[in-house]
Each structure stands twice: as structure tokens, then as C-alpha cells.
Image 1 (spheres, rainbow, N blue to C red):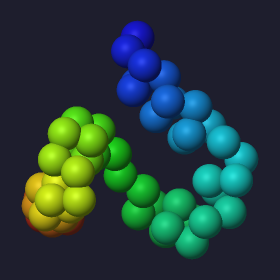
Image 2 (image 1 turned 45 degrees about the vertical axis):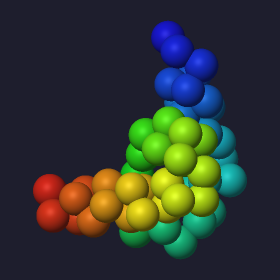
Image 3 (image 1 turned 30 degrees about the vertical axis):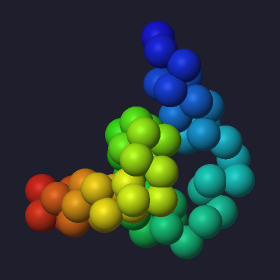
Length: 58
């Protein structure tokens, strides 16, 4: 398993996550890590595109 998948799994199993409003409303999504780190702050637009596409698919 890749390091990013391990991090995502660890995060999703953290008991603190279930206390967040977003998690309670099933609004927690994963995005591609390379979008953020590769493009820096400009990658935010790509992340928002990903999130928008998730909303359409749900």
C-alpha cells in the first residue's frame, strides 16, 4: 500500500474525524494528493474542480 493510501486510511480511522460536522453529514472526500503538492497554491483550483465533480457524481 502506498504512503498516501496509508495516510488516508489512518486519517479515516481517527476517532476525531467522526466528531467533525462534515463527517457526521458524510461530506468527507479524498482528493489526489499530487494536485495539492505538485501545483502548490495554484492547485486549489484543480482541487475545487475535483470536489465539484464529486458533487455531481453523488
